[in-house]
Length: 125
Length: 297
Image 1: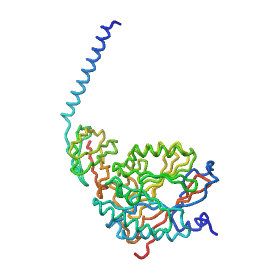
Image 2: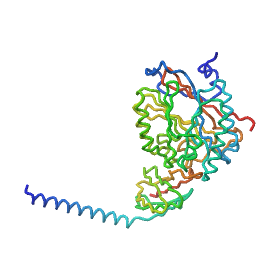
Image 3: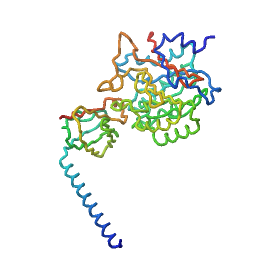
Image 4: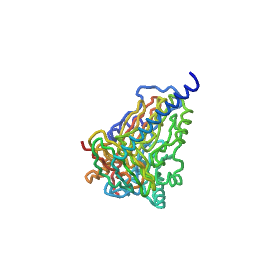
């Protein structure tokens, strides 16, 4: 294979790859644009809100903020967790495939009421 | 003279059920001639400084447990406290006062040595700073009559992590031991995912278990969940102890991990301590649970 032919194939591959990346990013952007934003504030020892209703399969983005501590946000049933650092908005895209109750909790020990710092998603069919 | 083994047979009715742990029938090969029978006492989760309806006798429960340990007809070789010595507070001065008071109360124990480790209530808010001032290192090892004890700290990180540095230390400690060495791990939180929705887990506990797994004779004793509980990950047995403050519900049995209510008809119900008999010739442990005697406050 000539050097120019190899160059053409590599360029075409890169273009195709670039095109699909652009398409994927656009899809992601579109999905995000459609996703409902749910803001949750964490402070010792409560999330506000702590009871949240979501439709099964609905795309949502949690926007998590913490006021007083690096609280944790853990959804054990989905094997998802993150730290919520004060002064930053932590975004968590979510989709619940099944209806039911799904709990979340703070998993960074934050003080004497830590054990009560939890909440629930009610996922409706 | 009555020995400890015969004494247990005679007194089994006085405590809870006897629980056998370990590889029954597995005769130890390594250093078995150096080993001797012995027993130790596990106390856990005294939460000194707690007050509230789940234990209206909170100012006395730890003192009663100390008196009960001192009254044992045959004294243990040592006593271990598996964390949450004190109840948490945001006030660093108050935290230190609680630790000083706890230290003074347990100084009355006749048995020495007493081994300590932190729980998240002691150490998570200041990464173990106050705890270290009063009780020293948060992870360490010691050997007793042929058994290798490893104390792991899975609470000084508020995110319930053992951490890379301590895992490296664990790896180096284990590297010194034969694969059939007798190993006992003391820690506060369960190393396995007992009930993640109640935060009853260690975030990197699987890494500690992976390091322990090649060793054929490992047993873990822990606290945190305020109840007797037994679980196995492969050949490794994990035993949780009762607390000295209030019992908690069975893992994942209800929405929230709220303390079980104080039973005025049976004060101290669900509180207690554990004796662990180490059998010299076989790789096993005999566990017996005891209530905290409820005398005059």
